[in-house]
Length: 314
Image (cartoon, rainbow, N blue to C red):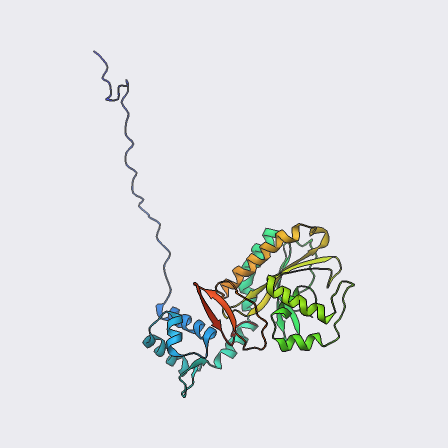
């Protein structure tokens, strides 16, 4: 008897694979614990921090909610002291209760805790120690350190204070109010190494360069043989609240490495800024003439003017 042939002309018939069995345990999406009313309240507070004092209509539009919802939330916050309404003009602003929360956040290390994952990623990517500093009056203070390798020298400790005119801390001075800059540059500035810049005219010009470039690279200014690469960190109001930087022995930072690492530092600072609520890219870092000066940021294709920067971080 002849062998039966398949329809395709071959001597062997092809068996079709059985259909794949359905997964009895399909992956489920993670539960959503968000509460819509709380989300809406936080959107409203962030809008108030950027725009306030502001009208109900402006706040509702910025927060993406109806005026009725915004009014009810603002009234609830007002009853607890978290918002204030100017009865004469109808404008809303943040209440004094936020001052206590801001101090508590600083005391609990909110900024350092938020920054640490980004500092860790930057340290692992560059192989260098990473530092976070904030301005406290006329000085800078180290609030967090990520030590990549115990063998690499650490140039400061958490809690240590430093001068604003030298090294990476000059980024903080560049975005400080003009009154702070004027007062500091009128003083006799300390020279820590032969490379420390103490000429007020040169420093004032460099502050403008920092605001324009958005980064700072220094060498030997505070510690001989150390190179620093720094970028500003912003909060939701657009205000610079910290400087993120790496410091490394100059033998590990021979050109062109500093320029390559600079991009990584700026990227980490930008990501941390986004985590703090910053949105978009600065259009122009105009000199802040006082604590209430406006800073313009691009956001969703439009320009929003941020007046009276407010932050819960130091």
